[in-house]
Length: 121
Image (tube, rainbow, N blue to C red):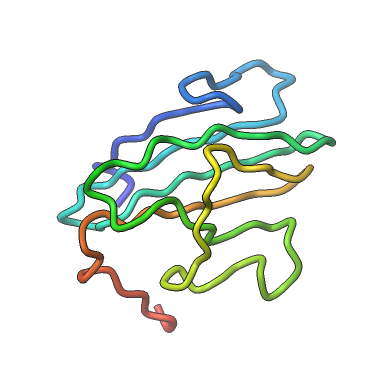
């Protein structure tokens, strides 16, 4: 999936990654071929000691819906990692990421009819 995916790197602002040695945050958008995997991932890592607001990429027209929160390690279980099929919609254009946490958002492309999750995989 990742080998042929388009990957865009970001910081708290889209397209502005901070590659400095003392940087404490990074994000990326992973867009695999919709034929292979009909979803995009937006991954955020906040290693800073304060919360940060990260801009989210625009939702493309071919998306089934908006960004959905799949993983947020700052949330209490069982909300920290949820089944991607029922992941809650993120309505905002930014995501508030708590200190020292990781977030993974998903966006289903097309009807999502080819998107299934095998819990045993």
